Figure 1 (cartoon, rainbow, N blue to C red):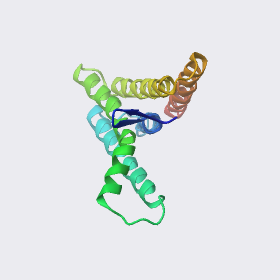
Figure 2: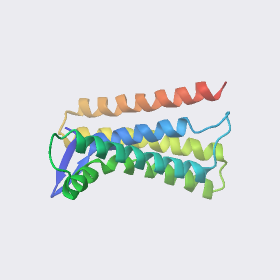
Figure 3: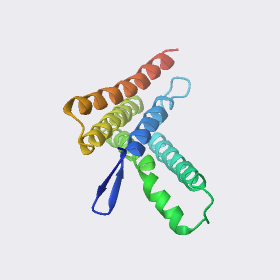
Figure 4: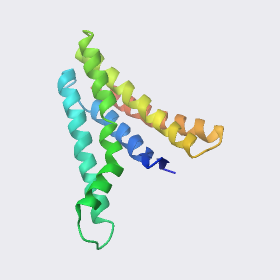
Length: 163
């Protein structure tokens, strides 16, 4: 189950998990020649990338829904459904900005953003499993599997950053 109805509103867990993974990937690839970008630039890149991917998802949803007239209602519905893809970029962007405001270095701010993105990804996966009333084992496996994906991105960042 990738969505949950909460009295007229739906939580799109799949989009939130995907968006968090996307955000972690953006953070991991943000260093240029091993030099981290500024926390402000990282926050902007995260949010812009999230919005661009959200728009791509909206486009794909609208054009893949068959031969129907393109209406504002269809666009709004698709945009609302896929908003968690963009929304998932906000916590790591805020984390980077907050770390920077505490006086942490750009490198440390980047790591804060990455940890927030990975933690968000695992949390969304757990929330999806709990909402689907999965067994405790499946809930735990969902969290661990998504944490493993996030840790794989971190490992790639370390490997690429060391060269």
